[in-house]
Image (cartoon, rainbow, N blue to C red; front, side, top):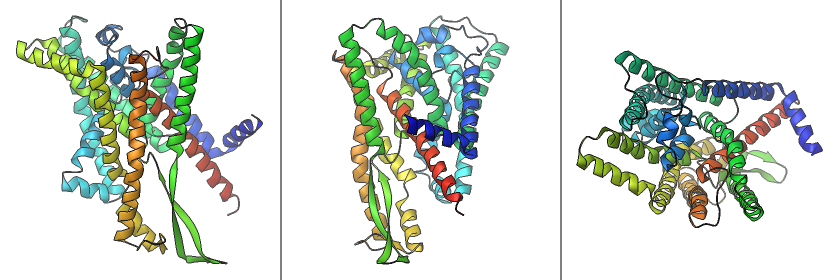
Length: 421
């Protein structure tokens, strides 16, 4: 305990870390204040009534940052931004121009970020109209006149853009990843109410099982998330007594972090939202029947968990190809005069690193997918009565906390070295 207090004191005394902590707290306060401001035209409880007791509400609530059901000005949250990111990630694999931009360094990534922001706006407008039409179709709100409808859509779109802006500010000047940090805040904000409501309905045995399972699950996520394989390298140009200087390349078991989970739940929520919209409009019996079939399929625990599992695994491998450029890494190693013992520099090194990363991702992706669906399975089979957060929420929460911890420790180490320069 004394060591922990001392670490906190050292971190707070470090100017750069203190600035990032204060900035992140300011974003937290701003985000919660925005979440408390109601949007014009939508009744406060309309969205919560629409998604009451449905898995769609949980999915959209998670990816929006936990503010969807409050009908606030940031109700649709990060959903359009994440969907736009998914679109460009997928298009980057099939459109050569986007692939070239992605590989052209910081300038290319800035252009893709700009395109992502531009696409976010029409997606936010579309989602605001879908939410309005769905609520109107189910009789949960009155019809708005043209000016009120435009105002409502503009406010929700502006709220989504503000959330996107806050996300990017966090990525630049705060702690942790922007999107995951804001989603994490929404998840954490819902935990006290969940605990209070569920503990009142549990007996002592159920509480004990609940606590033990939660501790084991969190410990497992932390252990697997921190696990890594160290690929030994040697720098022939950096010689010390006894030969070349040894180093290593760390490749994590979950190299892609929590983004595959966020992408999967965002993609899974989209057809359900469209299905609700089509049913509310009563276009025709055929359209209603097809939409209801899709909703029934995605509401089935077995199909929903299986689809979540498959999507997380698929996005883990896809995202690995995006964030882990082995060709670039092998080229940098060669330029620095480094090599992996037993592996020829250049193409062979790239292929070796790719093979190792894919093997590790098999285990990491299966673990992420299993944790995402395990709480649902245990609740469905009666082993548990409830959990603090969903499996996906737990992964996002733990990964965000660990990311913040790593960033603070990294800055602290750099600061310690700076004293001797």
